Length: 86
Image (tube, rainbow, N blue to C red; front, side, top):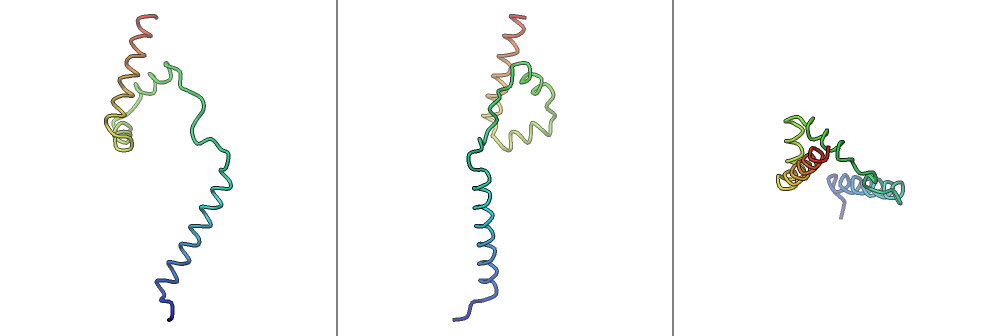
């Protein structure tokens, strides 16, 4: 049975995808996927204070309202501790 043109295209695309995935896996092997440096409380407060409406919307869309709300609550706690001790 002869292979159809759509099957041939799908086969080539799948092979290229596999090649790219293998190449990326080899290049990124051993890299840490997340930043290892933590934000200081001052940096975190500054970042929250300077978030725009679109930035906040993007965060909620990407991580969900619960996660963003938790992050904002934790940042507010840090702000209150800083003001209390400051």
